[in-house]
Length: 302
Image 1 (cartoon, rainbow, N blue to C red):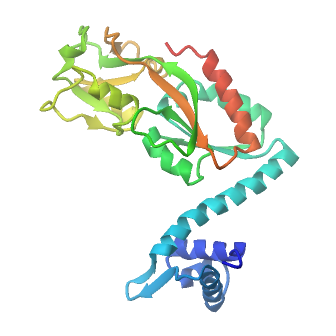
Image 2: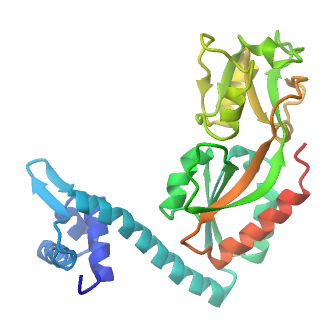
Image 3: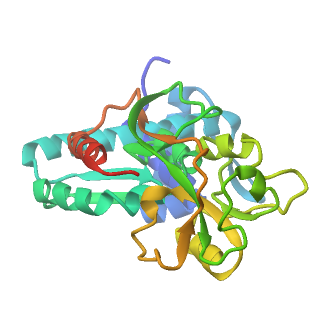
């Protein structure tokens, strides 16, 4: 390849993908349809490949088109970040940080962390995506998140990411007060219990399900949800059990309605922060991460 694609060509190709057609892309970019077609042909000539095929069912990406689109999206995200970081450094108080984490951080350290960050960056914008790490990793790799926080156990492909330990949290089994198994002291007593669990089988929850006595084949299939509200309601309104970090007992003020089973054989969960090896953190993201470390180190996770 003698020449690299031009930025405008990449933006046109991106908009064609988003719009699903050259006509739609032309309308979105306020350009004529022939101009968009011409830019697309120039990009294909530069790459010496066909990126798009047109048929009776509309437009479709070729195999090379799909491969190029994935890397192109990352390149454009990085260019936007680079320009934004320069602006952040120049203006200091502005910038945006995109973070992904589970409900544990949302219900514990995040409110104070948000206040501290906003004091230092009053015009900043925080973008939060809540979910398990297995859901957050694709967004992290696509450049949509600056970093993600969660429990990373066996089964997570992390070779392309920096993994930094953050804190360790003990977990506990939660039931409604008066639950028939509320006085259980061993996991074996819970073999036939009804469970509501996060959607992921990876990381900490994979460790639990491999634990002897957690639940057995043939017992009722657990209800899966990443919604804290849904999970708590299942526990409060029925005989479901769930497993959460002990630090999550207080935020909803449900201490009188929920009880923690006296089972101390659960493994502790190690939370870590993950970010790309290839994409340096922006100025604002680095400052947010510094504040996050301080908050996590001083918080009582027991």
